[in-house]
View 1 (spheres, rainbow, N blue to C red):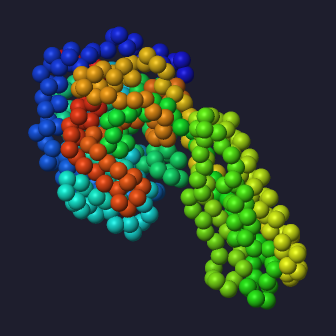
View 2: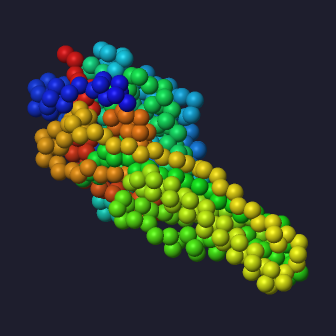
Length: 415
């Protein structure tokens, strides 16, 4: 951890936005965002209308590969599906990674077409993360148009696996590939410029399955039922008390099981998300989940015996817990150059933002002692993870300039 942080120059050594803007190329790069607002909006729509359900980001990745190549980058696709474009700097051993995730939470078949409601663009995934991907391309294009050269190498990545069970696999692979060289990570996620994520929210996700022999609803009535057992366990779990400080949450996000209305099911399954600002609290919550599900099974078996159901399988309910994701926690230390560069940009642009804890691609670098932040692309949005998700691009230039000034602050510019 100490080695990674030691590679970052002291905050006082950074060029301020005013100093950066003494170079006419920087002014030209910032002006590009205002000159190309219509183009950026068009790319946001085109990108969003290419479906990218979890683990099926390929078609959208192909589009991003073409767009990043058009910005003069040397582009490749890695073994997990990340699209990577490199802009070589004077020091190829020093890398600033800037990324936006390709995937959405929506399953295959979801309508991702964009329609207008006044100044808003409405579509599933438009704020999370169609706008982030368009911003990634816009920053690369602006740098290319201004012919800006940097001291550090900048790696632009459209990465896979940020949402749900993707488990941050894209960012994990990126950090692994550039291990020892990456000095800072900037993740673009959503539109908001009112905050910057500097604290990584830890989480664990599980698929819990209860299995049994199954049977006929009439002839085998009374047999222990996996859905009944799961329901009993859920009813217990949702009454578990969690602390407000450190903030701790849980969510049962999906439930499935059974084959027909007149069959006692062979299995029932749920997917559960556990989050906390404290790793020990997550461990307590995981233990509570296991205990309550097992208590639900015991209660259902006892009820089955009381119902006098068929003997077949009454004692054979089993629970299986499978991890489907674990996001590590971490925090950006105060006084690091990356945070100073962002705050310098905010002051220059007259933007006020707060430090926030969230679960983003920045979890991975932060958990490994690499400075990382997650920032918004500009504009306004809402309805994230819903079919009514929306984005209003008004004022987007502020977010794009904020990203550019932060990036150049840590990457440095070459004459």
